[in-house]
Image 1 (cartoon, rainbow, N blue to C red):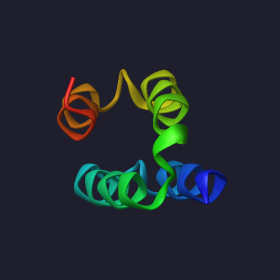
Image 2: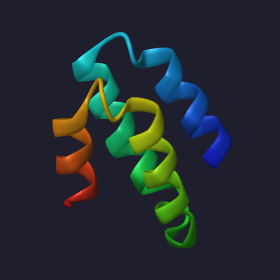
Image 3: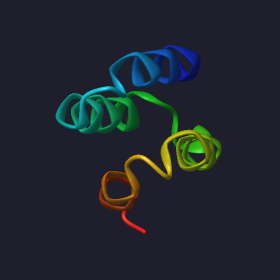
Image 4: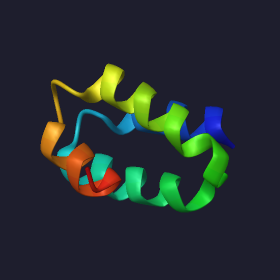
Length: 60
């Protein structure tokens, strides 16, 4: 499921609203023990493009 979530986020990253919606969905789907690794990947991949969204969704 984690890899599917990553693929979806990459595909929708062109649209800010869609990206935030899919990120929230992804966080509800993935296992709790995978969240830290997923967060790292998101920050590395989308940190410059959507820092505010990541901060809100991961509640930093």
